[in-house]
Length: 434
Image (cartoon, rainbow, N blue to C red; front, side, top):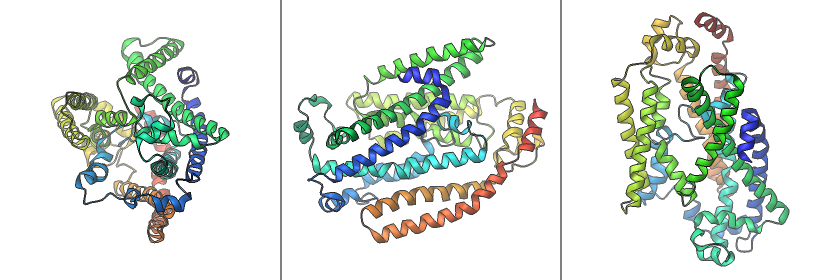
């Protein structure tokens, strides 16, 4: 179904159905949270708060447990956000998000859509999941409780990641069907996006450019459909190697570790070339595979230490490649600058050669917008949690940050959008460079 859908509908079909599927998934997850709270073992929201360990509900980890704090707080805040690239969390941009941004009618719409995605993804979606997860600790305190409730399930499959689907069994038939549809919608949305994205890489960027250029469009459409099917087969084979969802997520983090920095710096330093990106992807995969192999041989390495080592190793490799390989052709760099006008001192030499003047973008304003945007999303996330937990003072604190960041964004965004609205300049530069 996913293959047929992605192969025939293209990006537009993926985008339209994503909106519908998001609505279905959110409705189902909220319904699951409501019915989870109604369970006798839970006793509503007040019962949930009274019966669960307060330490489990803390928004911040216990700083007395340094190992836990390092892995789930320090590393994500200090390292992971800028160094790790994976679909949906792409420092410096990537095709997963870029395919949506480039489909927008203007930079303003692209920026607004991306901001809305981050707000919905990080602030709106998590709390229904968290409520169900907390309730599952009361309904199924031990894995053995899940096994007793579902005796027909293979014991080898019983794990902590089964708690959420086990909680869905309390839903009435109609809502259970809606929730299953929501989960299928999330699956279809994710898979169709990846199939569309991966096919565009292999067919448009590789096959059409280097292997069979200059053929009729219908040939590439057919090639895209064949590649879409092959990608799905490869993805299916990979599932036999992964035991749990957590293992899949950790593998994804490890493979993308160290590549995030290059995707950020390519916008600020002209010396980053295609070989740097290839070297980063290959070295990250090799290092991550080495750690995974060591774990299977009985020498496991903590995930956060493996992440740091992969980031350091990958960074050393791609920076070395940047200085050891020939830079991108100067004419291409000049043309790129005239079209994009990236800001920052890393483009000074190209900027002088292009003779196109300084960038219309302001790095200080962009950084301020980034800080305010992060504050807005995080304050919405933690403020909602504090309100649910009945922590009035914390909710008021996060609410104040939410309002302050919203006011700051309301004043800053119009200025940023004015900077990106220079179609006349872009039209002239396009005409000059073509």
